[in-house]
Amino acid sequence: MGRVEGKVALVTGGASGIGLSTANLLAKEGAKVVIADFNEAGAKQAAEDIKAKGFEASSVFLDAGQEESIKQAVQFTVDTYDTITVLVNNVGLTNLQKDLDVVNMDMDEWNRLINVNLTSVVLGSRFAIPHMQEAGGGAIINTASMAAYASDSIRTAYGTTKAAVTHLTRYIATQYGKDRIRCNGVAPGLIMTPAAEKNIPDTLKDLFLRHNALPYHGEGDDIGNTVLFLASDESKFITGQTIQVEGGHYLANPTTPDLNDLMQQ
Ligand SMILES: NC(=O)c1ccc[n+]([C@@H]2O[C@H](COP(=O)([O-])OP(=O)(O)OC[C@H]3O[C@@H](n4cnc5c(N)ncnc54)[C@H](O)[C@@H]3O)[C@@H](O)[C@H]2O)c1
Image 1: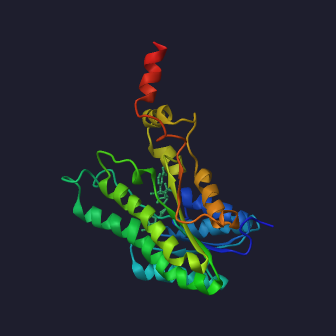
Image 2 (image 1 turned 90 degrees about the vertical axis):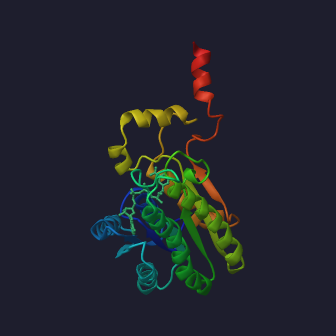
Image 3 (image 1 turned 180 degrees about the vertical axis):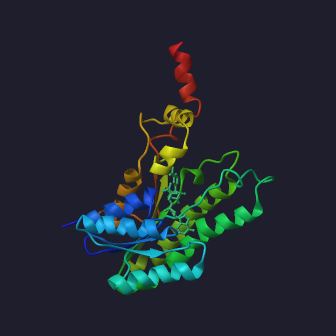
């Protein structure tokens, strides 16, 4: 029996990267999975790939910036598989060109990221929770980021929305715990999704490795496996928590790599 056998999961942004890893792992462990994505063709292909392996999946178009579209994705899940018991709010955007420091950031981009990164999590949960109540319980897993905890010279909106997601996670956990609905989050550090692998220059990859406690990068399945655990009954007494999956990147005193170099001289 799979670790999430009998559960029905909606994964937003499931056509690529972390969402795709998550959808694959949930399906492999017995969940019926709906992959919802802006990239409709990619979502369809991902669902077909899962079905070709003998597991269950469907796909639906989602624009996480539009309330009606989120509502439709939840309804599609319920219409297809009778219920929704796992919601993975994975969609999240970042923009290195426009999401800058407080004085210089583009305010339209600030509003867009609040909408897509934060409001979409409220709305997905708002539409899914009544079905979970009817089903006798469920699990919501929100994708935050280590940017929720450590500030930076740019990406003000991204970090702020992700910090808000970790607190929203606590609110949902508090408000619906008695209905046996758990809400947890996962905070990835740098994860080498195929897109990140392609777009991040080697010098930046090396810089990240230098600051990781572990000698390797994170992969999509590292997040997917954490989501799988949080979706499964193995985590039935965990709620309101956001698990940091970041290779020890933020663990030590920031000067540790430099001190190590000094000590070797
Ligand atoms: N990759 C990392 O290093 C990293 C680190 C920290 C947090 N995260 C978070 O993990 C999540 C997934 O990141 P990823 O790196 O896998 O991203 P990705 O860009 O590889 O995939 C994101 C998916 O979401 C879809 N999408 C984008 N906008 C959408 C919208 N408005 N509506 C519906 N679908 C939309 C895309 O089509 C794509 O399939 C995000 O919330 C991101 O902030 C990623």
